Amino acid sequence: MRAGRGGDPAATVPEAEFRSYYGQPVLKPPVWHEPHMPVYLYLGGLSGASSVVAAVARFSGHDRLALAARMTAFAGAGLGSGFLIAELGRPERFLNMLRVFKVTSPMSVGSWTLAVHGGLTAAGAASAVTGLLPLAGDAAVMASALTGPVMATYTGVLLADTAVPAWHAARREMPFLFAGSALASAGAAGMLTTPRAEAAPARVAAALGAVMETTAAAIIERRLGLEGEPYLRGRAGLLMKASRALTLGGGLLATVAGRSRTLTAMSGLAITAGALCTRFGMLAAGKASALDPKYTVVPQRDRAAGRRLAVVPDQEGGSDTP
Image (tube, rainbow, N blue to C red; front, side):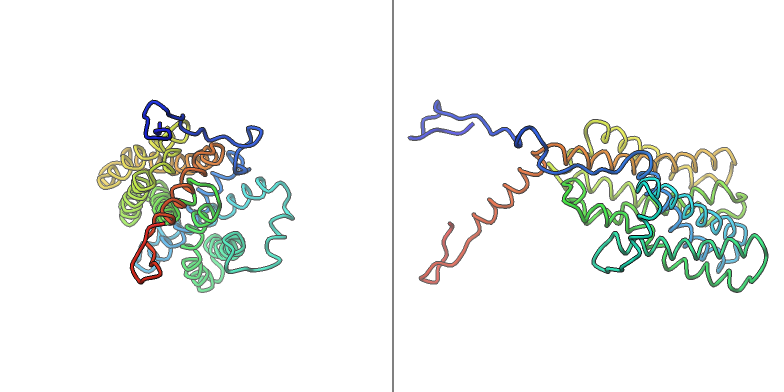
């Protein structure tokens, strides 16, 4: 409520309602579908981080973990490509994205990264399965460790590089959130597919990734204010809460999972479920923020008011507040 003319508190006007023309949203909500896009986001991150784990394990002499991570990277890239093509509707649409390369476009960079990374992981997996050209296979694994970090994080940049309020406002933290979730996922996969005695690096990766992911998610929810509300309410809020509980619980179990196969399985499955909840929750929050006009109008109004209230020099060299 605001006072009317003459300062009379009784003469008030109601607060504005944030509506749009004909009841339509201010922004067009994301058209990505479930489960295709969230699963692709998970599998892409899993593949990218697993490539890094495979290279580190190969250098450190953890051959069983290196083999498991190499196969996980290939499976994640292959299955992820399938989910992406299913989301696009027709395979040729993905091929069309490879017609040009624009370093300023996250979609273009991501499409080329997926193509190159998928080829490298396929070469590494084929060498491991057939036993042919082991040096070439190792070289492919090392090269995929370079494309892996891009593969694990470009989807976060892709979401942030949109007008969707909940995503764009979290552009600083989104890459760290996706990187942490990918690292935790890769660690969880390594724990589930490698004997406990040789899975110590995977447990470390799972714990570190869980801490990074939950920290980034907490910063997003606290820093964004109004634009962070979609992460706390409705279906997105439930998914993000479940993600935090599962990821933190799985990360804590990872620190002691070497003592028990049961704890190892519980940790790996919890982290995997948490990573999937994160992807589904991010998509739900983005759609909710695009559908509600207040998440677009209020932040823009606040930024405009901040500019109007800025102190600027007057003609006499002093300052004035317009």
